[in-house]
Structure formats: C-alpha cells, structure tokens
Length: 155
Image (cartoon, rainbow, N blue to C red; front, side, top):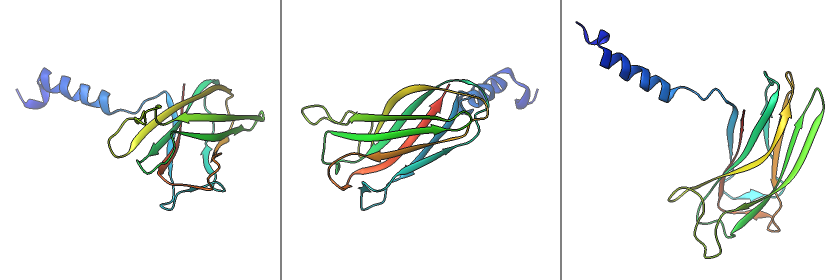
C-alpha cells in the first residue's frame, strides 16, 4: 500500500486543507499602511468594495495596528460606509480604546498591537458596490504610532 492511500495520510491532508481554506463568510478584508511620518488628519483611507453577491445583513469591523509610539489611550475615528443601487450612506463616529486607565495596551501583540473594533451591521443588497472611508478626528494633525488601518466585512 502506498503512502498516498493510507487513511492517516488522507485524514491529515483533509484537516490541513480545512484549516488553510479561506473563510467563506468573509467578503472583504484589507489594510492600508499609514505613512512612516504618521497619520495626517487630511489623509482618508479608502476601501473599495466590489459587487455584493448576496443580499444579507453584514458585520463590519475596523482594524487598527499601533506601536508604543502612539501617545494617547484612545483614538476617535469617522467611518463612512457608502453603497450604491440603492444608495445607502452610514456615518459613524468610533471611539477605539487602545489602553486602559493605567496604560496597559488592550490590543493583541508585543511590539505591534492589533485592535478589532466592531461597527454597527448593515443590510446590503445584491449588486451593490461601495466604499468605506476612514479619517481620524484627533486634535493633533499628525498622529504617530498608527501603523495600519483596515476593514473586515463578513456575513
């Protein structure tokens, strides 16, 4: 009997494929890198969403990656989600708590900290396309320490 036909080998390959396969519920997941100088308040991060294939209520999450050089415990963001056919626009102001009151990082990581912040769900229709736009609302014009900004959309 060859190794390719043994039940153990077939089971191992099946498990490996199921663990590495893509998540069919995630319809969009992308990050944009923040320039080395920092996130300027005039910089909008835009995420283009391709055609929605299935009408459903979708879960949205904002992703942030920061370093120890971020000087504050929170970051305030404006998030616009705009979709066409039918036209839908949702604007949210989001408070992301990055540290607790005694400056312990609340994100996952050692040098780079990952934060996932849920946004209110949205019902999308088949055939819609859209954009998600994110800007920071902090008083400081250029924010150091924010490394990446991202969006996750899932069913």
